[in-house]
Image (tube, rainbow, N blue to C red):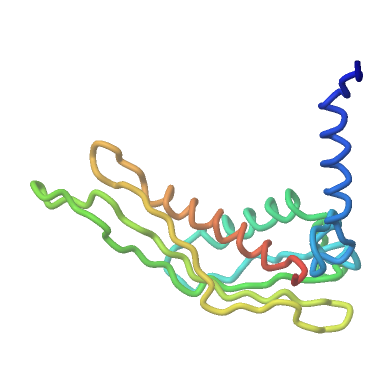
Length: 176
């Protein structure tokens, strides 16, 4: 009688060997476990974004969200502009509201969308080179101002700001 081989250790060995074969040190060559953020950069300065809109205070919220997102997702730390390797600067160029639906009986708005549009530039302070620049970069969020739900405009703006922060930090990853 032939002894049965344990299946679980055999499966683990096969999966591990296949995973190692499919990994590459260069992300453009296949799977990689290395960081997608430039390892030559140690620090980023993020001054408060300028605000060209009538929506006051969102520039501070966006800057705070960018800082938190950078600290959460990247190996970099925040530093003052004069000591940072790179600087992320930007301008909030537009905010808008649009009605998505209204109550057919009362005519009151049920759903609204808020859109925030920015322009930003990420610059290497060591060389002066612009690493990433985007114009008319925006994010939207839907909220419900109707009486039964009563979401406030600030909730929609906050959601759009968080989405913008996530997307901007994603733009700071190395190109595949």
